[in-house]
Image 1: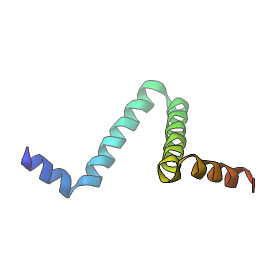
Image 2: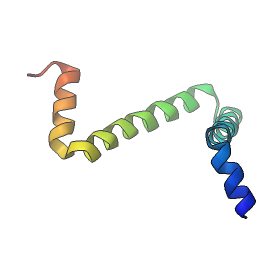
Image 3: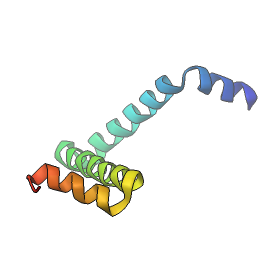
Image 4: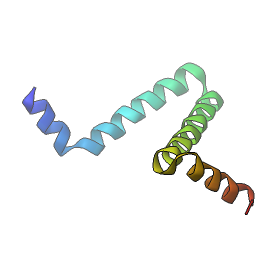
Length: 72
């Protein structure tokens, strides 16, 4: 188990990249291109919303939405 942890630590981003590629390929083959694209877009949107909420709460999210839609 320690060898596996050391290997992961050394090649962390390669392992994550390969795992993400496998998941993406499985999604493409099972649900199709457009549904996979929609899923990726929704996950990215939720990540961005969560990041803003983590950084500054509702106020930070309100400011970000205001910047996006041009409110001042």
